[in-house]
Length: 184
Image (cartoon, rainbow, N blue to C red):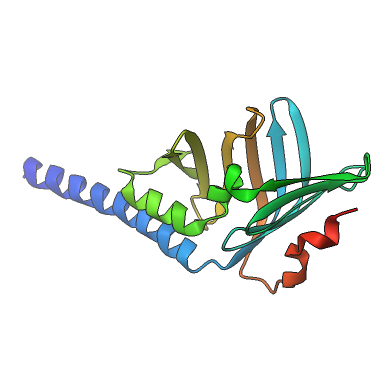
């Protein structure tokens, strides 16, 4: 009888793990876009603001700072602009960690290959590695929505981004991802 209970417990635990991973994948598949508030820590500096991610690979963020910093990707390029010195910085998206973070197909394929998720507080955590890049992706354990990531930026700074007030599949004006709107 004890063996039977032990086998049942083992099977139910295995099924639960498998179902969480597949539920997160299903949730990602059904996600076209996300709107959220963010808190980003780069080394010891903290920045906040609002973003919209539109899959695949588009993002628009407005920072809550004096200089009205904007980060935008059209899927190919990443542009950062602020009123601080009236200049902008443009990068090829595929040279940044955001290229992978904004690619839900990449995230789904990586999660499928992983053994199991790790439960951390109110989140599930997946540790992804691609080429020489390590990315940690966090999903809320209730909604299963993306709620953060951690990586190293192009300047070798540790970047931790936490999302809050996440809305899924909202109406998005595609014009906000036009980089020309944010060049000085």
